[in-house]
Length: 277
Image 1 (cartoon, rainbow, N blue to C red):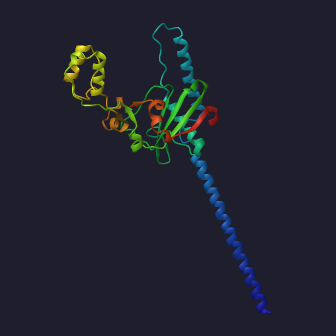
Image 2 (image 1 turned 180 degrees about the horizontal axis):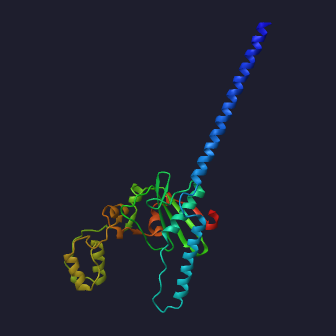
């Protein structure tokens, strides 16, 4: 009888232990999900003062200025008023809300530079025309974004993400300016005076020297200029950045940058600002 009671007591104790273990496991699982939820909420939380509604206000004000200039230009004779550049506070915050929507992480605008997300420095370049964009030779970034605001009057935007740092070889090798530097150090013929101007120009091109002027001037150039001296050598982003030439570090996104790194250009947003609410 005593053995039976001990067996029952042992079984009850084991049941309590198992129930306790099961309850603890459930508690751990619940705590894990709660922590994950709180982390996600914190990552999505706005960390600066530029709310979505304030961004829309800024866009409205900027677009009003564009319409005003358009109407004023209709009354001008020859010289026209230029549109203001696409404001950085607009492009940076459009990128901020696009990134938040795509990755469920809100970047911080209250930072040194354009945006920061966790420990990554983000560079934002906005534009509303096909003109060149300016870069600082010493601007550092981990990821760069381009905000196309060409259709800003309809509040439609495109955002491209390029996961290349400013010091990556692929980015530094982007050709910013210059032409092919190939030329021939060919022998100058003795009968330059008998050649036609067209033939002299072709010889100048072949030797990579200046090719402007009348026939006597072309002959003088051929005889005096060093082969290759008339060429504009190709300069990459890295070449210009290393030389610290801010004014020379300019390039159009669609005409120069995107075609050279097409495989790294990821269109992460193409739509209306209202889609980012």
